[in-house]
Amino acid sequence: MKSLLTHLECSKTGEHYDADVPQNLSRVGAPLLARYDLSRGPRSPRELAHKPGLWRYSALLPVRSPEFVRDLGEGGTPLFPADRLGEALGMPHLLIKEESVNPTGSFKARGMAVAVARAAELGIKSLAVGSAGNAGSALGAYAAALGLEAHIAMPKDTPASIVAECRSFGVDLALIDGLITDANAHVQKGIKELGWFDMATLREPYRLEGKKTMGYELFEQLDGHLPDVIVYPTGGGTGLIGMWKAFDEMEQLGWIGSQRPRMVSVQAAGCAPIVRAFEEGTEHAAPWENAHTSASGLRVPRAIADFLILDAVRKSGGCALAVTEEEMFAAWRQFCALTGLFCAPEGAATLAALQKLREQQLVGRDERVVLFNTGSGLKYLEAWAQASGT
Ligand SMILES: *Cc1c(COP(=O)(O)O)cnc(C)c1O
Image 1 (tube, rainbow, N blue to C red):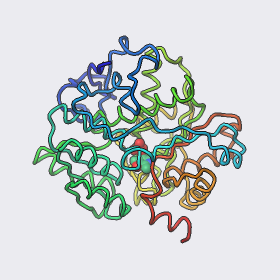
Image 2 (cartoon, rainbow, N blue to C red):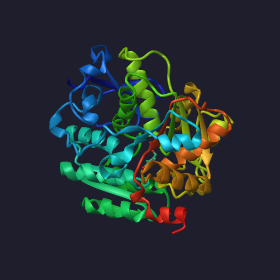
Image 3 (cartoon, helix red, strand yellow):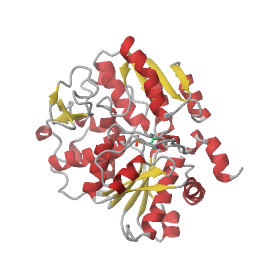
Image 4 (cartoon, rainbow, N blue to C red):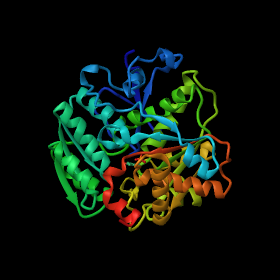
């Protein structure tokens, strides 16, 4: 089935934009959301393309021609019962969505697979991103596969394996003394003066589309049901907003009703702007000062789509909570030892959060809870040395 993409819509004003020319933010500086003619969409998952991975959802993705797709194996990741971990927590229905098997070892591949293909389709040749690490290597991978130019900036203390991986793709890489926000500022010069296209989280519309496929996959993997609770490690929030968008699309497609999982946004105590805004009841999140955490994917002091994250969390009846480095490290050791998965610290943060949710009785023992392991521990050997004391 061909892409049903019709237009882009401003997430603040609802104003429509042409989807068939390159677009970044709307006139009011808000993210643009891709819209589809869902009245012609698949009436059930059985009508989807018979393909492995996220291109199964191509009718609901923005890429119009398969010519621009370079499938490196993105999406279609396992969702499995964490029985020993569940036993330790007294939760018989605990599940793990295992995203580290994506290309480049993190779920950033989902977003970049779609956004880079769409950029190529729209004739864009030079892509740029300021990244906390994994978005840079994912952009590098798909740019290499398609023969596009990639300009990437990331903090100089990004885990060494991520830097090495990024370099292997032949990209232009700048290591910055600062955070993702400084890395973004660094590539702005090339974007303004040299015509590079900005691929930063939610500053272009299509990484979100790649990440929303996690929501569709959960529905299919749970035989036409959604979980009760989704525990998601949040940096820029693309995955959380993406899944929330997928659920709305699924309702319009007639696959589900109005029920939704409770969305739990997890951040590190050293960088928790969304948690603070959630607690203070504000619509936007003020930038976090002196952000620090060894879960580099969570070291995002300011998210452009903060209001969309907060809106999804609140509407779902979920919450936002922070975990300390110590809690995350203890959870990391337990996660690996009880699942056989060498998870990323961001994945470990979801387990630390679940322990708190249980203590505060915000999650019941029989609920179906999904923890997201968003990347591979192999990308974080420096942090693991700290966590394990080796
Ligand atoms: C980027 C990243 C996150 C945060 O994802 P967002 O969707 O941007 O909030 C979590 N974990 C890992 C491993 C990441 O690379």
